[in-house]
Length: 267
Picture 1 (cartoon, rainbow, N blue to C red):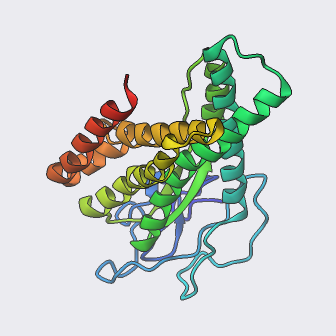
Picture 2: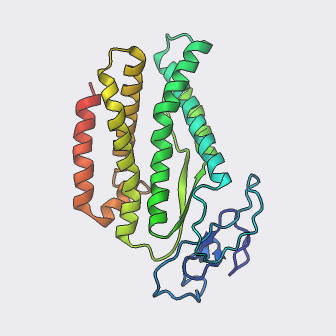
């Protein structure tokens, strides 16, 4: 799709929530494309733009503001979520065998660890990103998850070394005039969901069943770690945006979480 201001071909264009035009990253802000919309009015949720991704089916939907709510998930987004979820499960399974060393890598053990990874690790990453999406949409922005192929390749490659560099993708948000409070709330939603998922898995750590115990330990520790890591106040992590919005709220989220993680999961 081409930018309506400069004509640049953009595979993931931005939609202006005031005039409804479709623009590239350089001209997504109203002042950059000489927006003719009424900037004093409340933003409206606009239909997501069609993209030039090869998996995207052509759409005849108008990119201009509409009173109908756009689909919750596009076909491309569902595909990206599924691929990222499965690839992360495979990567964490491989890293587990590499780390343990002595565990035989047979079909049964691999399927067991893959099942645990898909149940525990996958939701931690995917729901983290989707929480950003839903909060952004609540504020009137267009938002969709896109996988990062190179990040998934890095996850699979580093898993052979016994650790994971996981960057499966990100939630792309399009809109204008976002306030620091809106940005902070969108950002803190991801770690908050990880804490909730970790809390749901934690009771399983008291189970006498080895499989349920493993699911509980992995599910709770991974999700609490993801929340803690993403709350670090360094860019481009979520914590840097929460820090800019409200340092007291950042501290109330980060400090208790850090103490809980090190008390529960660090020997």
